[in-house]
Length: 289
Image (cartoon, rainbow, N blue to C red):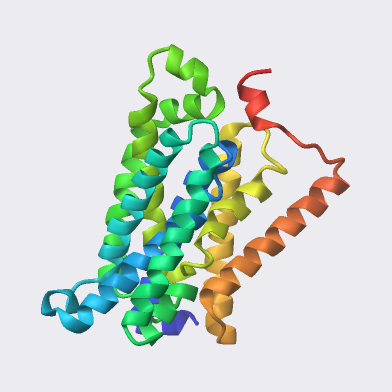
């Protein structure tokens, strides 16, 4: 495979893109899991589907959209969906979780309408649904590299604020933290990473890359920073191992990556049980008793 990697550009694109996604998705997933917002990734991935379907539909009728990477429209829809979720969470103050299924339902409904207007399923959309190694272009690689740089810079600048907000929101607000601004920045980052992950993992599987490595890491980590390290490690093993297996066995990369992540999770639970097992409540460990 090493010879093929240096020979074919699409394999290089898929590998470098996968490494960046394997870094970003678990990093943001740690905050999502701790804040119990894991399902938001599903909602945003479905609204991203609408954006990509809309771009492909417009590409059939408008010349401008024919040369435009559908990923950009997917990112616009994803960020818009993230902002709508935040707005709905403020409208339903006592039932905030209802915002996620509303956007999820709206996203899949809109996507199906766009697909039907485009006279059915086409190969491009299928690649976005389940991921594809050969579908990753050099343009996608540069786009995801830009997203990676932005997310890493923002995460470095706002790490303390996000940490504080994740474990004790009330105390963070009392101490003067601008909750809405920090959460807005975080949710936009999540939206961008989900849209960027479409090519490799696929719309229907992207949320698993944000939760499975974190769930496995929680079985071993003794601190929040350790959870970051283990999550990224498990994410990278899943993505790189999944891409290699998918290439060698001619399997769908998205499904292979997710199955590998599931096996890592099962293995981590089994090992943790054999070592005595313990379940840490991270909110309680760092937040209120």
